[in-house]
Image 1 (cartoon, rainbow, N blue to C red):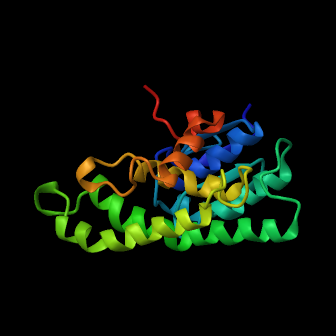
Image 2: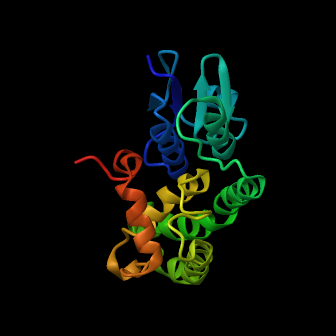
Image 3: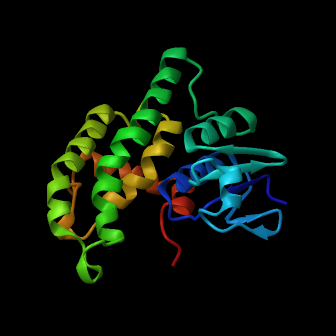
Length: 214
């Protein structure tokens, strides 16, 4: 039996962040909309009982139900054995919290919600991407990625040379940003961000949670 249930779908960036933490710590899990053998419809009243705003992911651990990805990954890191993904040093730990929030609240929105999703789920006439919206939002997307690159600096990972929860939050959306069609590319091929994304993909956890199965 799996230790935890991740309520959601695997292509969600925040579900993947949760999955990455499980993989890093060796926590067994399942990703689905099934809860105790019953399929719960996305955005349904039953979903609202798990998350008041009907979002994903939701973590189910025994009788415990926890929503919102930052709370979930903090809980997983604190409650399960395996490598600690939050530094012992209080200052570094605070920086992990800071960047988890910055990524979730601002950075991801700028280049995932307002740019990439316009390509993945087109809202234009005839099911085509709204190119005007994409062009309008591109400067903010690039600016958000520049902030991420500035924080990375010459380190291997965002906070230090060790993988932390902040990297788990950043990895899925950055993976998508690095694999856009050339005409809509946001990350330069030989940039530090591309090298960082490759390091994340090459981790054992990244090979499971980031790279699509053949």
